[in-house]
Amino acid sequence: MAEIVAQPSLQQSHTLVSLRFVWRLLFVTLIVRLFYAWKVQLVPDEAFYWVWTRHLSTGYLDHPPMIAYLLWLGTHLLGSTELGVRFVGVVLSIGTTVVIVLLARRILRDERAAAWVATIWLVSPLIALTSLIATPDMPAIFFSACGLACAAVIADRDDRDQQHASAALWLVFGLFIGLALLSKYPAVLLPAGVGLAMLLSRTGLAHFRRPWVYLAGLVALLVFAPVIWWNWHHQWASFLFQLRHGSMADEQTARALSSPAIVRRALADLSQYIGGQAILWTPILFGIAILVLAQFCGRYRRIGQVDRVLLWTGTLPLVFFAAMYVKSHKGEINWPGFAYFPISILMGRWLSENRSKLREGWVRGGCQVALGFTVALYLIGLPPVTRAILRLPLRMPHTLKDLVDHDKEGRELARQAAQADAPVICNHYQDAGEAAFYMPGQPDVWCVGIGARPTAFDYFDSPPPFARIPRVLWDGGHWDLFCAKYGYHRERPNKPWGDVLGPRTRRTLTTDLLVRDRR
Image 1 (cartoon, rainbow, N blue to C red):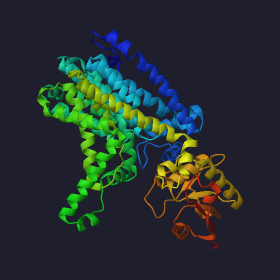
Image 2 (tube, rainbow, N blue to C red; image 1 turned 45 degrees about the vertical axis):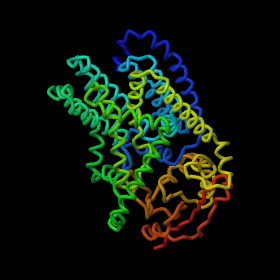
Image 3 (cartoon, rainbow, N blue to C red; image 1 turned 30 degrees about the vertical axis):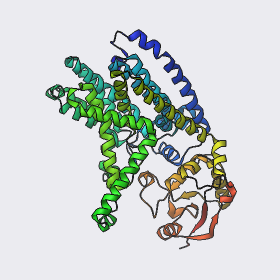
Image 4 (cartoon, helix red, strand yellow; image 1 turned 90 degrees about the vertical axis):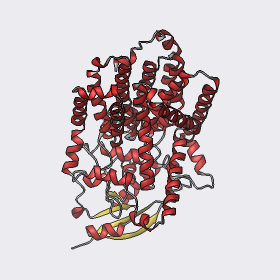
């Protein structure tokens, strides 16, 4: 990584001067993100990942274990608070921007183009969103960016006929790929893109006649081995879950459709996918990204090896997740998010090749729109603004409702649990995470996902001994299935208590007191 910082260009001193303002803005950005990490309540997935820190393991059903390790570190540094949960992710988000900007300096050798890449990421809502919510995306993006930097420097050396000095970089590349895979499985698309870029060029093929590529793969495999070990001992549960989660469709429904209907549905899915990416990367920057990818693909034989690496690692995730979206008719817009990091450097190359006012004007306009998206994101995230929006007589998305009032829910659950002298058991894993985090004293709250898909709780050690628990306070649906399985009956009818939270929350919440049958 040190070589990425060392810019061999004659413009080094000028680049440092022109980017000095960027480093100052990054410090301001760090402060802003830490403030939001402190003030905004955890969303359900964050609270669920925080529960993992109480059950540290080498694998989980939903994801690899890196997010649990990082949240454990943050909460041991700053306590089990919102800031503690998000602290490491915020720092990694700044680190990702630093890596990408230094990489742009290293391979573009153009002060102005590197400054534009920096500007794109300073205003990007993509990285702002992934930094403010503690999910596996942030460590996956950070380690993938570090891996991309190693691969890009190797390719840049190829362009300058310096292949002989890349052995150490390949090993570091393998280390970062292993860490990225410990964060999120789709990180495998980065080494796949790098491998394709190398295999499809005469210069790149030379690396496969040396041992370093294979040793890099071995390093990545060794780092990732604990996850393989966990899956081996749990019937490959995590691998199969993610495969079905991201790529399986309702085959019965698909068979019932006619050929024209299948085509229409595929076009509709593709339109939704493209629209989601335009929102994620903002419309103007997304349009420029597609234009840049098309131009570099059109002159593939004439571009250098480093641009081929950037092109493959940027294109492959977009194409792969588009295919998965069309196949399964579902997906999250953040899944191909890493693609925009190599694409942003290609956009810098596109600007440096032709310093026209038109190109810079479009990028400037894209950055202005992205800044507007990011400012709106920050404003909506402020709790007073969120509550004001929720008061409007409009149908609100659950993601907005999930930003506030979990502390009130926790206090009410704790009051009811104390009154019933019963532990809280939830039917949904997100509810269990929020209850455990926001109930006074942060007690253990278990999830029994009966009537729904399996959850990580099904693989945690030491589940509650329901055979010896006389009563439980059940939060969620399918209480009848729980009673039938564990020998309880409902003593107190379903009690809605959304009114306790007030109209701001707009969530309907219920609890049931379940008492164990006497036998």
